[in-house]
Structure formats: C-alpha cells, structure tokens
Length: 237
Image 1 (tube, rainbow, N blue to C red):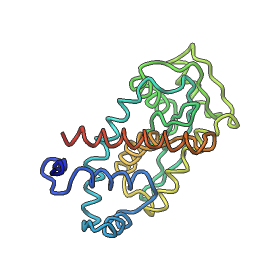
Image 2 (tube, rainbow, N blue to C red):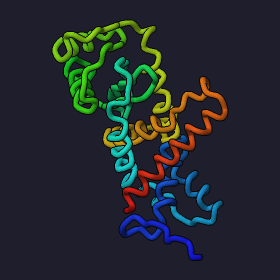
Image 3 (cartoon, helix red, strand yellow):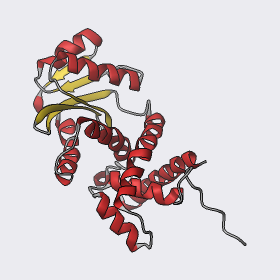
Image 4 (cartoon, rainbow, N blue to C red):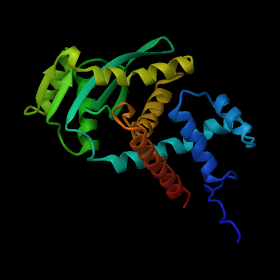
C-alpha cells in the first residue's frame, strides 16, 4: 500500500505540513527564525532562516484570516480596551488592543496618536469585524474612550476603571516579550503585521489550562491542532 502524496503549497518545494509547522512555531512561541531553522534541522529538514521568514510573512496572514473568520460571533459580549506605547526607530506609537471577558484578543491596531480619533478608529474596526456592539465596554481612565463610545455606541454600558482592565493589560505581555526577542520592531508595518497574525493563532491555542483537568486540556489541545491542520490543508488544496 503506497502512502498518500503530501500536499504542497503552490510553487513551494517543501510540503505544506512543514511550512505550516514552521509558521506555527514562530507565532505560537517566542522563537527567532534562526531558532526555528535549528529545530527543523534537528528533524532533518534543512531550510534557511530567511526562508522561514518568508513563510511566516506569506502564509501567517492567510492562516490568521481564516482563523478570524471561523471565530466570528464566538466571543464574549464584554470588551476590554487598552493601549500601550511602542517605540519604533525612536518614534512613539500606541498599540490599541481589545480583548473579551475570556482573554481572547478581538483586534489590535497600531496608531501614532492616543486621542479620540484613534479610539474611534479602533472601535469602528471592532464593530466591523465583530458584526455587533458589546453589552459592556471596560477601559482605563483615558477620556478618549468615553468620547469615542458616546459617538459610536451611546447605549453600551461603559465601566472606566484601571483595576477592572487586567485582561487587556495582560494581553500586552506577549507583544512585550516578542519585542524584546526581536530587539524592537523594525517598522510600524512589521509590528501591525505581527500582531494581526499572532493574535488569532494565540486565540486558537488559548485553552485556560488552569481551570481544566489534564484530560480536558489534552482533548481541547488536540482539537485546536486539528483545526490548524485543517486550515493549512485548505490553503494547500
């Protein structure tokens, strides 16, 4: 009995499974492209870190888009919004982020301002992608949130208190770790591309292990991996 031929992405000599695995390693763990090159080499797969970089850029956003489409409508109706400063080539930017009550990232947007216009841009993007307004919105004391919410979602309950916004603040930690690993982002475009790709993949593997039994965790992890492989296969088809 012969084995089924491996699926390949168009014009790529490596099987889709290997490419998807390399992309998964990069966005799932705080690894560099050279780290992934070594991990693949240990398995007998000789590929340069430049090629891994090209795979991450080319296929990462495609995987993220499909994951984002699958998860639409499955998030909590309680949104938490927060922003952090990101310095790129000496210039300050603000990374605005929204998460739901369970810690899943709804969206992230890098902007050069921290005002009402920037808050409006994030909220419009959220409403477009989620397709509905939240029941409750939680933010810190930044007045731009209140001004933007009053204009776009006047009937939504707004809770403005820094102590209530821990989930949004904690969601920034992954970006901070990766920022240090990269020795800072090289451009605003690179930063936006990274968070836009990373967050849907992180959502898929956010399993809240603390509250699960070992058996339940293994079952959910297996399901997440099967979804990832299904998405990779759908692009290769």
